[in-house]
Length: 286
Length: 217
Image 1 (cartoon, helix red, strand yellow):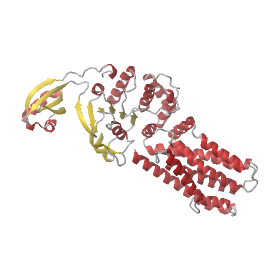
Image 2 (cartoon, rainbow over the protein chains, first blue to last red):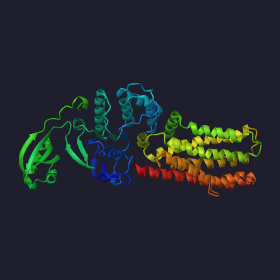
Image 3 (cartoon, rainbow over the protein chains, first blue to last red):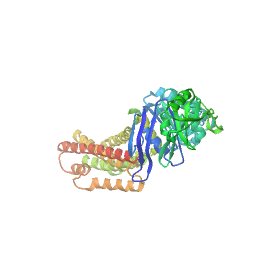
Image 4 (cartoon, each protein chain N blue to C red):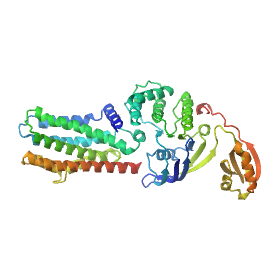
């Protein structure tokens, strides 16, 4: 399992971009990282794929192979989309024929406009982004890391991207992506993390398929940490002096029983509405 | 690794940025070594000096073709940034070997008589200068020195240092060997030792470049 322990990063003697980041990313997990521009999302992703080394802390258990889709693919390359992908496929260990076929399949699926034989630097931003996505999928990645993958893609490709993310996760791969739109992160990720002031915090866990329930508890000093130890807890937050616990619906009874035994008082139990469909620019829900 | 080198070669050929240093080398070769009826070793010394500076320039250019983001993708695909760096070193050395072959053949086509021993010493001189030049190009690339102006000045300084400082191995002593009056047969071993030093210099250049580049990322 990809594990970050106490990871911090700064460039040279500059300010700390990230500090004290703890994160566990098990197989088949789709996690989203959100945060403002310049908050350190890309830096975290670069460390996840191993391009950049943490200044402090450790990253262990990185799955192999890794697929990395950067934020902005430079548009200086004169190789054609197909030639570039074929080369990278060979670098990944495919034969020329297999790499070429796989590249053509991916470009077809992502409906690259402008043709596979056009030099990369002549393609539009969205189409270059498709090539950047395709290169990460030439062989099925065990860790797929995507930096703002939705930006620049057209509406049709949004659906394909959501499908691809779901497929990789279904095959046991870990997927991490960044996006600043909540609708997108909630619809596609089971875990959402926020980077703010160089720190990473978990926002909530909303399984995109399983329904969830929300329980408001009081007592035990209202420590959300104590509540997090209850069975089946997906996320805890403190709200108006109460502890708000999110739990998978089928584990709700077990949680209530354990909570009452542990001395909590149950104030409210509510079924959280199913995750709302995403707005038109947010891709489709899976 | 072969796939990686093929990729780097393709990127190099499409970028066409190798042309300027290569053309400069060929021009120097043509101007300074033709119509010289004397012994062949001084001709090889001149060719090696030209190759030394052009190898440094070529290597800098090659390492600067890939944008940082593109290099990150290549490194992830290749399973490590060292492998990606080594593929570019291979391409630079391959290019220099082609140029060396031209430099070795040129005097022969031009009417010089070249003995086997002279050819061997010529190979040693050219390979020594090529590898030393690649080493300089590595540590003056964008991976180590970000600003192009400083990189160029550093490269120029290092080239001059290695050429001019008397007795500083491997480049300066090589020129002195070739310009000397010793019999070619006696030069093979000492020139070979200098080639060994050049190999070490290249290893040092790769190590420094990799360390600085990973530290900075």
